[in-house]
Length: 551
Image 1 (cartoon, helix red, strand yellow):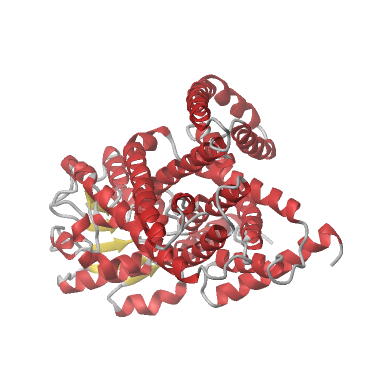
Image 2: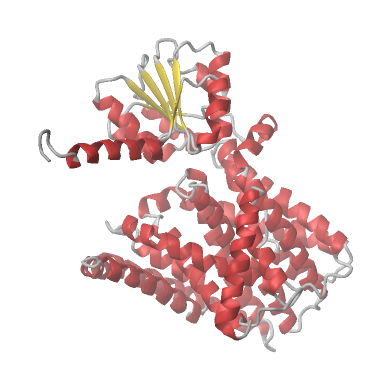
């Protein structure tokens, strides 16, 4: 197809077909988009040449994605996750660089090449992880917020690494590094002061004015996100860090939910081009003899990185479930890893073999870790018996909320899962003069609902010993709003093993799971979307139906 417009039309048609096939095969969409980039790019067919235009759309998509992430991270969350995000991020970086460096040296590589590749192995893909967590509706969960925190630490680390390696190309490397450290400290200080002043005195008034028109609010949000992304790039940081700060600066405003809702479709469309662009840029000409080293390093990233995250988070007082779910988010390398190694080649520090090795590790770890994250909960259930070593006898940081116990000794209803739907359901049942006990394993959610007067127990409902501690004997109903079916099945099995005599209602997102849940003991399966539509139809029909006797 001739012309840029024709190429874009071809790409979109290929992406739509690949996406449809991916859904039919129950595979992640982003893997299909990366494959389309490989097939349409110069490595295979070479049918697309509009690389600059696709790259521009990809960069805007990344900026919008990180803007949305920052939009959801308010100051209260930062205070809670800041220490663990910093400790986990820096700990994982140190571990991967040291062990990776020794592994690569043992493979017969030179020390400078080993250093470059070891550093490249530390960077996880913020864009891919955030997209997966958003699709699973786990970006606001405890492990989602912690993961985003240490991924941002990694993003800042890759920028610093690039600046340090670039400074080494001069004749006087030591003076260059000292000058770099001084300018970096000055930039961080100026950015922190400027952003604080904007958030306090300027942005609230500007956003109030922009919000008078929904269209204008959307344009302002995209402009603010891309503007700070460009400013961050100009200042020597990454576009991603700038876009994240732009969203974070609006996170405390009353319009953040409205902005987020209107940006979701734009984000998903533009990210399509990011994944296509990533596939098209993968370098296959240097893969030759790097297959076995790539296998070893891929296993190191897929297993070693999650292990060090679990060790650090367990030491800091988090439960093994939270550490495991966070650890899976660093089980791959980033597109920045390939860019970082390519920069080393351009500076004359290393040869092209390092790029082939990094490319292979990137392909393997991105593909495999995607499945690990998508099926994280079933994977955890299988591995949980062996993960106790990564949890303290008393995980104090998560269990701190347990000291606020205001739960009931008897309950009419126990609601498991206090997300958006579950919390409204529990509070509504309590207003109906029922004795309601809520259960959730996110300590911040538990604390917030306790402050609203709802008795809440903090714990993992899939653990048999925790279920035994609940007042199930006199409970008439158990309601599960857990988002994944594996947890619902474990809960139903646990209740059956404890001879629970009451009824169980399960909230399901797909009608195809109805029969399976009822076989496991669910009395009622609730469908929030369908029930809401039925209620809306009844309400509107009563209003719109003409009075009796009226023609």
